[in-house]
Image 1 (cartoon, rainbow, N blue to C red):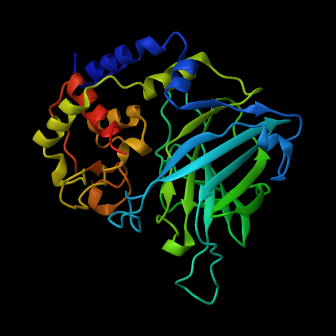
Image 2 (image 1 turned 90 degrees about the vertical axis):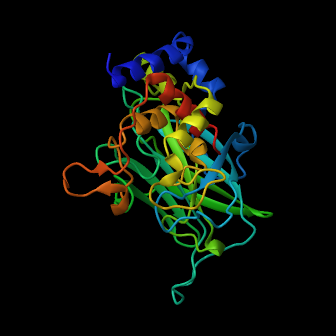
Length: 342
């Protein structure tokens, strides 16, 4: 059995305990939440439905994979609360997060930036593989609902960093409100997918910290289970497999050190380096399945920076990270170590 098949078999075995009830397993792992159903989704922050809706607690981590990021600046993770209501083919999502200042951005000052927030949606794939958290991939586009303080909202699409385009159709409705030292922003619009569960991720920009482009904080993908959206059992089972992790972090840490991962990647306690993506918070941003694939097949998806890949074959970017001589258990243990970093 070759290493790819062995790793697949090991991952399947690790997820076997989840297979009987994948939705419950995803919920217990903090990866899936059920959206409350209403007749009409509210946009008014004072609507009583919001007070009656439980919050989903998420964490937004500093983006550090591509510049300009927040790496090395001591930016702390942000606690984000998400509430969601759905009905009549529409969804409303409320975000709340701390921000001590109100920033609008001034058009006459190129060094002035506005507070902003975005929701990123993906189509759930049958194989459970979610798009790269950083604005999708060439073959796995994402839909983005974007709000900027003082400038309203936009509906966009992206296929990776630096690929934003306007998306057809009206932008989402947005209402923003300040409450103490926090923002509360409501987005509302048609459901962006036809099948469930709905993958959503959040990005936040702080104008006071020159937030723009990649200078943002972002969450991992989270699944929303919406009444009326049909779900394929195979998709839920595959997503459960992506979320499952059964390795030993301590052994994975030793393997990462023995294989020289710190030479190209920032890891806790290591020397700063930009030869490869910063991995010091990678467990907070990526699902275990993505981590396993990145170790097993470094060129499967390469973060789009020139010095991360060999550019001699533009049609297929080859990662500068070599394929390591690892067995399936080694891969699972390194993935478990990376998953612990947050």
